[in-house]
Length: 121
Image (cartoon, rainbow, N blue to C red; front, side, top):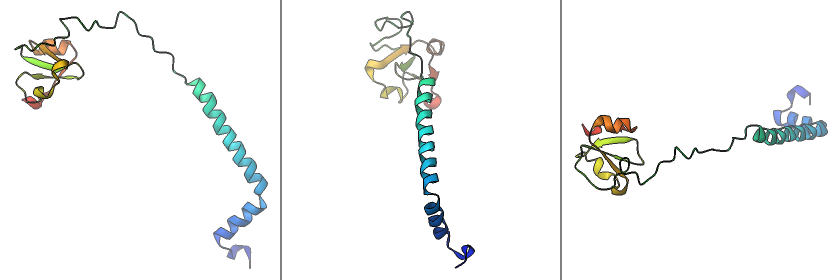
C-alpha cells in the first residue's frame, strides 16, 4: 500500500512510532515550561498585603450613621445594601430590622452613598 492511501490514524500511528523519543522530549519540555511559568508567575503577580488604615474603620456604635430603632423618617436602606427606598415601599419591608438605617431626605441617603431604587415609584 502506498503512503498516500493510508488512513489518517495509520499515518499518526507510524509518526508516533517513528518519533517516540522526540515526542516524549517535547512533552516533558512543554510540561516543565508550564510548571516553571506557574511558579514564577505566581510569585511575580503576588498581591501586596492589604493595609487597613484604622482611621477609616467606622465605629459601629455611632448613632448618627447606624440607627437600629424604627422611626418614622422618610427613607430606609440596608447597612449591607446599596439602595434606599421610601419607608412605605413594599421592598423596604423585606429589609432586616437589624440592618435598617433611616434617612430624613433623599439627599441625606445619597450623601451616605445609597442609590434610589425607582421600583417603588
